[in-house]
Image (cartoon, rainbow, N blue to C red):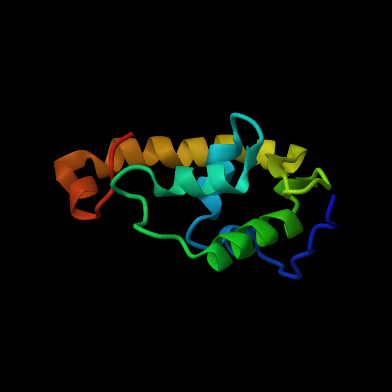
Length: 126
């Protein structure tokens, strides 16, 4: 397991914001809540739905996965075979973060759906 980076910040909200900043981090953690996924499965999950991107640069996705690994939210398991097989799964810390994302999702469902604000923001209902 990769050693988690320590966030030298006195404010817990700022530390949290820094840890989850990035376009795909919350969605990656959310997709991993149901079990381990391989790189291609994570990429496919991010592309689904109208809120998904048309294309995710492999470099961007790799950077997000590396940052989540370094923060201790996910773990990367390399099977050491050819062709390469790598799986990502939530750590205990990552699993403890799922209810936070669920609360954010529930808030969004309740408040962004009002008066079609979700549509204006280009957010697809799941």
